[in-house]
Amino acid sequence: MVMHVGHKSPDTGKIYLITGAAGFIGFFLSKRLLEQGCRVIGIDNINDYYDVKLKYARLEQLKLFEQFTFVEGDISDKDVITGTFQEYRPNIVVNLAAQAGVRYSLENPDAYIQSNIIGFFNILEACRYSPVDHLVYASSSSVYGSNKKVPFEESDFVDHPVSLYAATKKSNELMAHTYSHLYKIPSTGLRFFTVYGPMGRPDMAYFGFTQRYFAGEPIRIFNNGDFENDLYRDFTYIDDIVEGIERLLCKAPDKTVPHKVFNIGNNSPEKLMVFIETLEKCLSKSAGREIVFNKIYEPIKPGDVPATYADTGLLQEAVGFKPETSIEEGLQRFADWYVEYYKMK
Image (cartoon, rainbow, N blue to C red; front, top):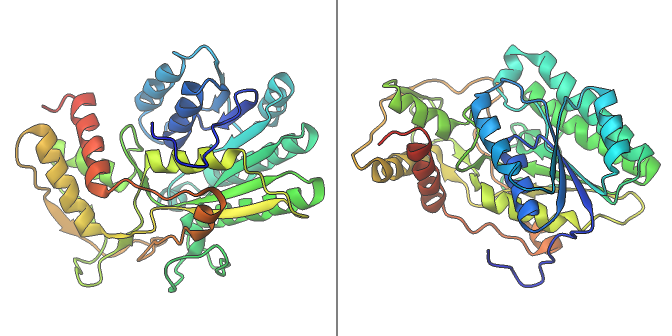
């Protein structure tokens, strides 16, 4: 791995608690820290929101490291969280456990309140009673709602969420701000923009499109077939996201209210159709034959936004981080992994 100038390696003397460790970002972050000799405690409830086999496959890789400890439990269970903090006394906590997905929040709102509100409250309470050096937690670009001004900046007004998922993430930022003010918990919220890559989440569009193609099904594109005003997404490759998080771990805010929020994205949005064409090309290369999706165009879904575009200037200023992976490179790595993992050749 190329170390960037001025980038400090994580402190291997610290204990890192990562919630959602069997999840996509949680797995890659845990793996990166473990590879550098850090002690990682991972929590996950391994829910069946998507294929649990993938979660177990990620966990198998983490369990190869002797400095990894796995706690199977739900962050919405206060006893699990309190007990874990008491037993392991983590120095740095990264809360990535959450009920993800905008569209699913229309069908199953309970899951979002349990995990994203109650679960996060339990984490904050635990940090209050077992002080930590830094709490880093996942927010989301969805907090920007249908803001028309792009790129999205952290100082933008974010009081008009258009999905319950977005509302829970905005709540997390408010809760963390309050706790950092009252109890001086240094905390940093990360507004993630569309993260993709190998071993990713099957509920994400690029993964779902690929699965549907190999199952002989058409893909549904929610842009009304309007290529002039196509949806834009700030697709960010997983390694870039992990690099950004890793750099922030030892950079806890230290002001009167030690709470900061950063966008973590690619700062370079792509049209959804360009992303889809690139995915077709990459899969064709991996599978050794031409792959073209059968496409059905439908109206944009409630809760979806027309564009996501991160201004990442603050993050760059704070830790010198700028994503470097192009969608061609990132999607090729995903396609290679998918074809091999699911034996599609």
